[in-house]
Length: 359
Image 1 (cartoon, rainbow, N blue to C red):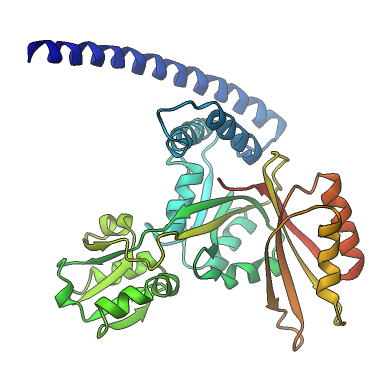
Image 2 (image 1 turned 30 degrees about the vertical axis):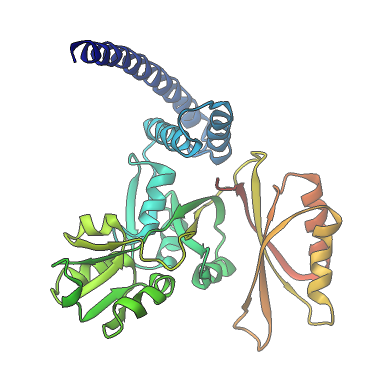
């Protein structure tokens, strides 16, 4: 037994030396970032540079030879980048709250613990906080992989001048939470509309007689459940910790491939990163084959569409606004040609932003 223990201790000493080297290198990186931050302040440049951060993480993932998996490498270096950025300037980030919503988690994943996070009551309030300059950026949900688009977020872009700066993809694991931790005591179930839809089969099998009550967010649902021993909430593990609830069951979503995409909104479009996505909205003249004609410029220029949605304009019956996501950046010639051709055929065309696509 003595020899294996001695070997373990020897390896631990090596690990300690590696840790000290890592700390020294991180500290050196932080000093360099502070120096860049000072130059940015003089130049009036943005502290948050999505295309640069995307390139840093992507380059390191490509260089990774294991044994750490790419997601682990991304997580480690994303946090280092976030922590160093906070030394340049403490950013204020508004998000669809309250604390412990999935949007809050997405905001923390993108900006790190060093940012000042401001929870607001509605998606519209997120836009307002950024428009009024009370927040540098905002984070809002845009779509779920199983339940589709968040229409209210799309609608906000119609009248807002804010642009999409980046996107965040977050795996969603829903949990059943309550004060008692006893499923047999549940008579009322709180949650936001989206989780209720994403967990409907599980709810029908396990809580068929519970009264379902929609809440403004998953965190609000958890707060409501924390006030009533006969109720429960569908929310995250973070919400359980934040509101003092017991986790009865984990991973109750009907699809295990359950992701939600979030948008970071601000006042400036991100620069070209080489792994970009662009979002646009437009309205077309009512004629036969109009939508087909609108999509042809993208095909002609070899541009891949990743999403197309339509929403009523609410100004005239049967008049619609179309939202399209495609791969590419507005600085690329092919994209510029496609948008120019599209614009000649539209009633109006608005670019919502070009930004690094999420991993």
